[in-house]
Amino acid sequence: PVLTQNVNTVSYVNLSPKDWVFSVSKLSGNATIQASESVNARYTTSSGTVGPAANIVKYTSKSYDSHNAYNPSTGLYTCPVSGKYSVKAQIYNSGSWTANQLMYAAIYKNGTEQVESEIRFQGSINTPLTVTVSCSAGETISIYCYNNGTSVAHGGNAIVEFVAIEKVGN
Image (cartoon, rainbow, N blue to C red; front, side, top):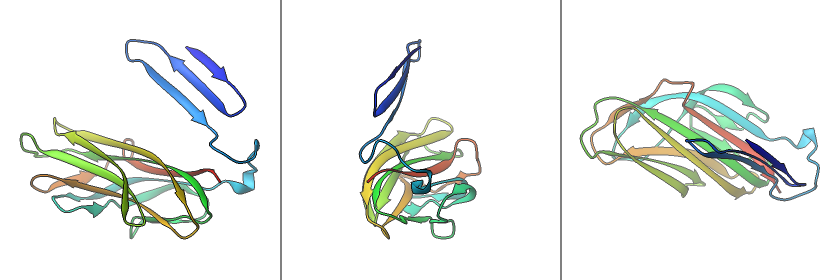
């Protein structure tokens, strides 16, 4: 493993048969972020049906939410302050899928898609998503899921299923 660091970035690189890189970068703003400026939320466990129509995924178990900005009933995160937000989500699906069936998951801001992931079903599916978006206070972030075939249940796995939203810059 190699650990490198400069003023704005810390990186950990592990060169192994399954190479991976972990990097945390400060995108903008002052060199120091005060604890009082922290804006973050993490929820796990969703349940519902993935079908041909895009539906909002509603995560129901709160791990933390600094501003109570996520509404588990609607699946909407309302940004409490303006800034850049890192959004990470994962949806877990398993069940009776047909051959060549695809599952799509997407992160939306104010009802407009920001990033999409597409996975062909081969047993259980974990669909990861990540994006950084600039938001004004009051704008919303949500996670959508749909597929190109028959409806299939999703959810129920708090370990691999989550949404995490964190303000990372101004």
